[in-house]
Image (cartoon, rainbow, N blue to C red; front, side, top):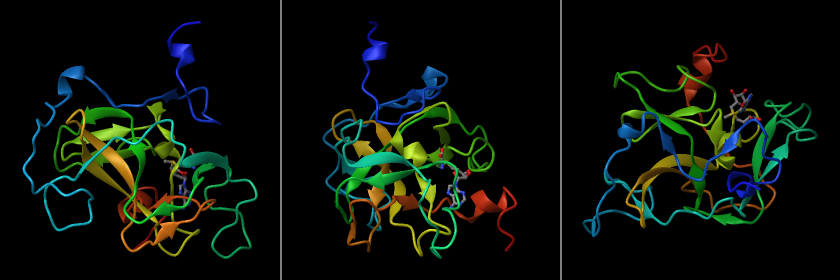
Length: 211
Ligand SMILES: C[S@@+](CC[C@H](N)C(=O)[O-])C[C@H]1O[C@@H](n2cnc3c(N)ncnc32)[C@H](O)[C@@H]1O
């Protein structure tokens, strides 16, 4: 058996998508130099400060034991009367209680340059793409992690319970995209869906928001 086929993957991982523990840069020359340690003492340890500096954190273990990918069949919308708005499809659910400000997992994917800094990634590429570290897009369509299954909170919760935010990995010095429990959310309970806000522009560009 090849080394590749021995790679550990999360349960319910789709066979057509490559599981990525770390980002791949295309072209590889795009990969920025890592931060070198020690960093200045100002770098915070979570993203919920007014500091413009990226927080520093240890890479979460992957595949993650904190989450599971689950079909949305039998999962209800906010009003409890209709199907989940992303049905048929999948979502990401907590397997344990997750406390406020926890770094849950990494969003990985193929990182490309935006070429034009005024261009936003959302809406220009796939439904699995977001902007990353100022001048990149990170796309989890064909390669990615469990985080690619995170749905938008609209129609399911009154507010998102998680956010995407970059951090500096304490070991490699590389900038990564993290999924964090949102500030003000005391905990995401075991069994709850992990949900972010994709932002209004994501829905507007797909003709699903009119304001
Ligand atoms: C990054 S994917 C999320 C994972 C996706 N549900 C799956 O099974 O692969 C983004 C896509 O999920 C769907 N989606 C996510 N949140 C949604 C919501 N609140 N309402 C409707 N569709 C949603 C939309 O089709 C969106 O383009």
